Image (cartoon, rainbow, N blue to C red; front, top):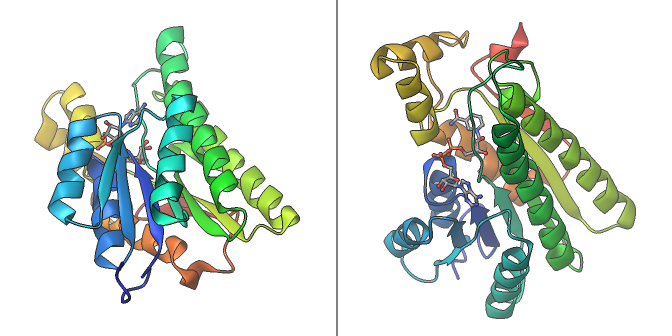
Length: 255
Ligand SMILES: NC(=O)c1ccc[n+]([C@@H]2O[C@H](COP(=O)([O-])OP(=O)(O)OC[C@H]3O[C@@H](n4cnc5c(N)ncnc54)[C@H](O)[C@@H]3O)[C@@H](O)[C@H]2O)c1
């Protein structure tokens, strides 16, 4: 266990840790002294991220829609480390589709992963953290703050994550649990998720440039733009911040 860094000594569990924002969060929290449990439904991918970080970091296969798997992974973390201090709910999926073209199957899939997955994570983490406190950070999206015409199901799911977060925050405050719960709302961040979105739009390079121009700051976000906020909220620097929603969007939602 590291004794230096902004999250020194904390035990942090990250979902969707094999890729993108989750992987970058694992790397950043580890660099700042946390012991990280990297999880993903992609078990080998999570294991590779943890292996690159080295001991004492670990990995687990976790499909966030699997209630029993959540119980097992959190129980294992507590058994091994004695506590859980930080949960980053980064696992998520997106499918294009407006209200006319979105299939019920796609809508349900996004709801299951993005909303039910975050709900199960929050519930499991509150159970593990309530004796000593902790921090939960939920990845919503700008699409959880404003409507996007061709992201009907994604918007619905990320809007639900925003208000689930506030409900968790208020419950924990009311119970005196010292657990903070906050949501992050990135715009387009340069990860495999945006690569897939750009590929679906045709010329990926041109599409990514166009997505970057959507933000007043004129560029795509970088994973470090998001992990800076994760680190702040995970650390004791964020001790008075709960139920908050932070847009990391280059000004996209400011107008
Ligand atoms: N990249 C962006 O532009 C952007 C913007 C706003 C919000 N977000 C949100 O941030 C989070 C991370 O996005 P990203 O860009 O890193 O995506 P990504 O596709 O790079 O990574 C997502 C990870 O989640 C995992 N995952 C998917 N379904 C899962 C499940 N059921 N159980 C466990 N793991 C699962 C995938 O295997 C993958 O490793 C998502 O919730 C996403 O909606 C991303």
